[in-house]
Image (tube, rainbow, N blue to C red; front, side, top):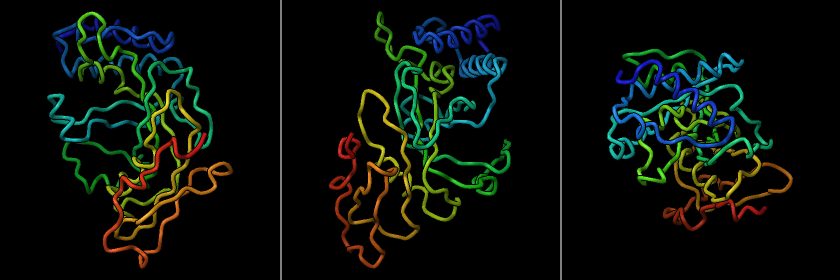
Length: 262
């Protein structure tokens, strides 16, 4: 580790204060050019310990930067991770208090609900499948307590800043029908979840449920929204026998938040 323990503790306290006051701090990578990945995780852990001392409880973990393309762009060769605390979980169909965050963003993800702990090294895909109870669509709420762009140097945030900032964790909403890991092609469902959560709004809407399609091969020719005002988002999917040999382009019927009404 390049940073001293006092530097790590001070950085964690600054992040904690930034979250409480909703005032971002300068990039840690600019203040400590010698910072390492190990230092960044040390800052994250020190911040989590502050939260645990205040009564928070660890409920899960977030894994980010799973794409090889994103890893190559940031000069790393593995995903980053953060900690999910009990106060980060919001009820499906409930309200998300936007005033709690600084620079909110939302991404559609898949949440793995575990029935047993995973430990490494040597953890394989089969270990993950055996340890997973079920998978459910989720909305990941992101926030940053560190400036994305430095006003003076115009330098963008580095991977060290993201990791120290608890991997940009801020909240999560779980919704939809749980699936066993092998009940459906999770890659296909991930694309579906991303499409249904593709919107651009300055504030967060009500959390909504996503009901995944049944497990069958082939792409839907059309999807349509029903009963938006009286129930969570629902999608209708045709029977496998009605699927055309050449499905329509995905972009043609891609739903957006704007098309779903207020």
